Length: 188
Picture (cartoon, rainbow, N blue to C red):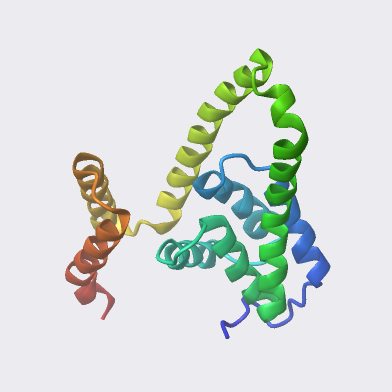
């Protein structure tokens, strides 16, 4: 089982649940758009984990199947309170979406699907989601990229991914292999 950041942290399970309920309820766009909200809550506001641990969790969860927000909330919950904490994180981050989707599908969608105001709101939310993803990328870049080599490697991989549009897993594998070449001697 992963170690907690601080053995003195015995965060109540209900607090983990409420924190991730808040994250899940007030974040649109999922995936990368939810990362700044999770980081704000668990790193900066609650100080449950460090910036470095958050970065490590993101690296791990991006290589796992499933949703990034769900996997991240599980990992953070596990670090705080073991498996029960992971379950509370998962329940908290997913419950709002499930409830909202059921309500929309059952009641609101038939009433609002042709409403120009609702459509305009969603067109406005889309650029906001892109802005949140870009902000998360810049913040993560500051925290994760190590030195000039990391910045160059990131730029090369970004250009390669955009130009070739290859699968993200291949980009991760190439990045890992490049890391072996570039950083292996520096870390010893």
